[in-house]
Length: 371
Image 1 (tube, rainbow, N blue to C red):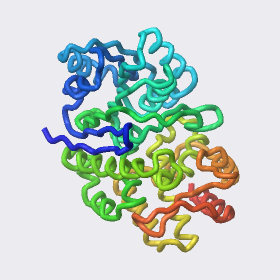
Image 2 (cartoon, helix red, strand yellow; image 1 turned 135 degrees about the vertical axis):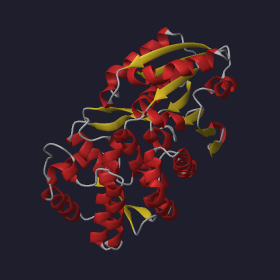
Image 3 (cartoon, one colour; image 1 turned 45 degrees about the horizontal axis):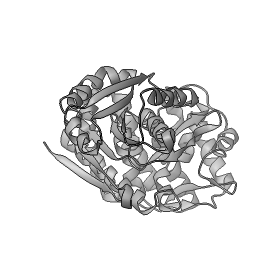
Image 4 (cartoon, rainbow, N blue to C red; image 1 turned 90 degrees about the vertical axis):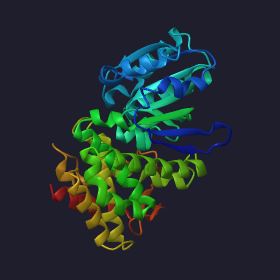
């Protein structure tokens, strides 16, 4: 078995991201060294529980580790106050102690919610991420951002709480619906666009094989994405500077997600892909990069069968001014000013705080006119 290891270097809170096939089946052996008593609790969702909880439970019990599990409803709607309370109350009922370990088995919704619950339970309980989607493996499971959505916006309530270990089993990606896999690919492309032009070149060549199920391509894509995120998080854990680059495409994305009600109309990674295309279009119009760059971004996303334009989002969308108003609630607002991640070229992203509002409105208006 090929197992790649990526270190997230945060001093006393450092941990490893382990990437390979069969990791859920070996989870007992991987997690056992972390345990002070042979007992864990697992929080997952009902869909993932059906597909992967039996294998995880078997792997843990084979190592003599007792297991209790809670399955929450699937979907973005779970990531809110109601299920945060349900999860936290359940962990208390299970008498989870500060020295115990909580396992988060699922995609980004479960990882974010369970991580936040672990952060606030007894003022901080250790947890392990077992991400089961491409999006969670390359992005949300690494870096310690946890939280929930509220009526005011996405991820506005949360905490930085680093996991003790991340086990990214790329074998489970075979069970993902194609749309969910492509949603995760939106975050993979983001890494090439923000800081590694060679990786974007590689994705242009090997992206179709990754989509088709090529395990070597998936292993490389996940590993390179995690390496990039781990490096950035190690240098800027709480997003004071460089870590903001990871939000490439997200200012547009979060406004679109709110406009579509965090529904199946637009998955997160789809919004990231559209947001990256818009960020490069904005960069080109300001004169930061050539017009060839947004064209190349859009061509690759289109070749992968992804959503690229606002026209690809079903149903009505609000106007440009309303979308900009939705951006105003984003976490990336500083002193009332929107921060955008723009680019001087592919692999050359930077944080911009002085973006002309009329230019943003024009880009959005033109994009909406194309619907």
